[in-house]
Image (cartoon, rainbow, N blue to C red; front, side, top):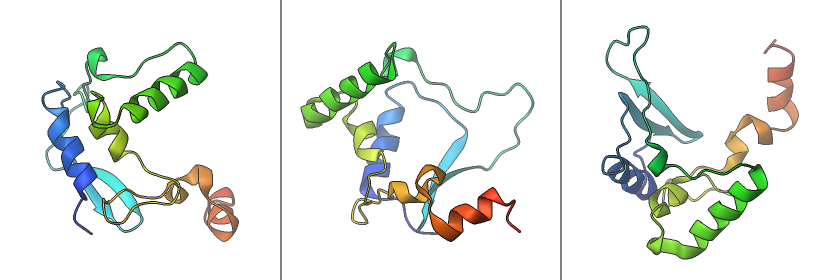
Length: 121
């Protein structure tokens, strides 16, 4: 495992004042981020609670993309800046700990994708 980067640390600091609550902890490996839970979870327990005021919301994907682009263009003035800076990028950014989208299944190619499509055999 590797230490979470600056973008992740800033994002995690941002979540509490936003009212975001979870028993999950963020961790990171060279191939990407993941969450773990170090306590018992019972049926019915909330794994993530996010107030609507902490969400970018829209009635269509196109409008949501426009809102996200607008907030990204606002830079540090945006309420959502820590979240936006936490998102993966196409190429990744090792300095800030932002993984590349190529680690997500949607962007897999070749042998890696074949392993998933044939059941890993």
